[in-house]
Amino acid sequence: MRHQYPLGIFSWFGFVLPFQERLRLIKEAGFTTTSIWWEDEDTPWPVKKESMPQLVRDMGLVLENLHVPYNNSSELWSERESVRSEFIQRHIRWLNDCATHRIPMMVMHLTEGVDAPAPNGDGTKSFRELVKVAEELGIMIAIENTRRSDNVPYLLSKIQSNYLGFCYDSSHHFLSDKQDFNLLENFGERLVATHLSDNDGLEDRHWLPGHGIIDWVMVAQHFPTGYRRCLTLEAYPTTEEREESPEIYLKRAIQKVKNLRDQLGIEGLSG
Image (cartoon, rainbow, N blue to C red):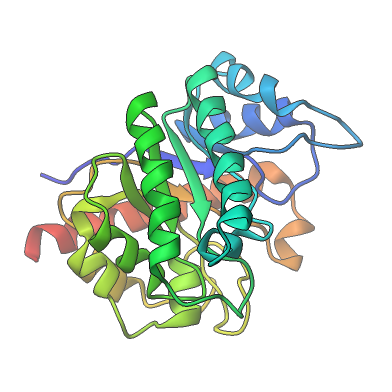
């Protein structure tokens, strides 16, 4: 029997609309979960980030996680303790925000940009400190694979905790090391979230699955069969799709992720 993963889409899906309107459209399209970016939404419809979690719940959606800003996140690996400390404290505040607003998971990047530092012991110290707080609060930290492919496996192998897992971003994966499925193969039991989207092999386009060059059959073959959490899209419209209505886009989006869910189910049964 195929597992019916909950289906979600990031609350920012590329159409400039009031936050509550986007939530309503997500719900009406048939998604059951969403996730949020942990910054205030500015004009034309300003919304304080602290009000977003309840707005999501009021709409009858499950709030899967929040994604925190990653500006200068490479400093978490700095050899200078004073520099690392500033960024550790920033993430500890965000973990406390999760606890305050009843958000079970914080998604974060390990580095910023393409010139990312190599994983090292200083970074491990940073994350041991963060994981300790996460364990105390009961909040999951999901570290996301980005352009550097070795730092997520590095930390997962160094830190054994039920509160440290990873978020699989398909677009980042196929821009960095599309032939290497080490992360999904060797750490599949630590997968706790997904950012599913497609690209052209050149940039992180955030297209819907099937619009680009990603080999979804390969993803399905390596996708951990024990995963039982949300299948979440982090997708934005193409130029052509932007000319259509958000309703049409979301209808297409949920069909794409349902197709992917079926594909994962089939591969999971045979693999």
